[in-house]
Amino acid sequence: MKITVINSDHLGVLSSTLCLTHCILTPLFFLYQVEISNQIIGTTFFWHSLNYFFLIISFFAVNRSIKISTNYAIKILMLISWFLLCGLILNEQFKLFSIPEFFSYFAAISLCSLHIYNLNYCRCDDENCCDNNSNI
Image 1 (spheres, rainbow, N blue to C red):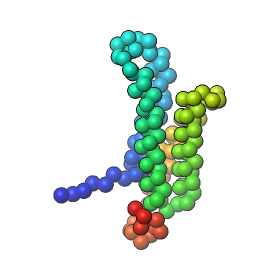
Image 2 (tube, rainbow, N blue to C red):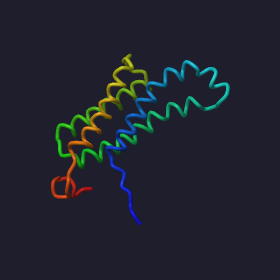
Image 3 (tube, rainbow, N blue to C red):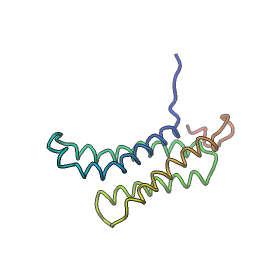
Image 4 (cartoon, rainbow, N blue to C red):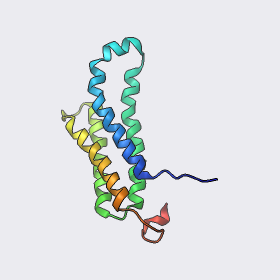
């Protein structure tokens, strides 16, 4: 029996891309919300809960990628991008400040790009190259 391990960077790219798609489709969704809400009850709750679903998945992907990455700068940038995205989503939910949607797109694209870069260039080839591999 072969055990398949999901690569954290693949999961991060998928999560970030889906998050970005969700962010782009949200204005269209609210444009047609009146028509959709007449047909499907509870759609708004489901749509807003996707924000937190993507944040949770991306948190675990970033956490795992940080543990196995060999590039310290990528580790820091991933953390900054995730906290920025998290802060922007929470700000959007609680309406604390008026921040353009562009910044959410930028944070999601940055996180996705960092996962792709980490996947291609910052990986350990064997178990002895990373100090943090023993914690995995």
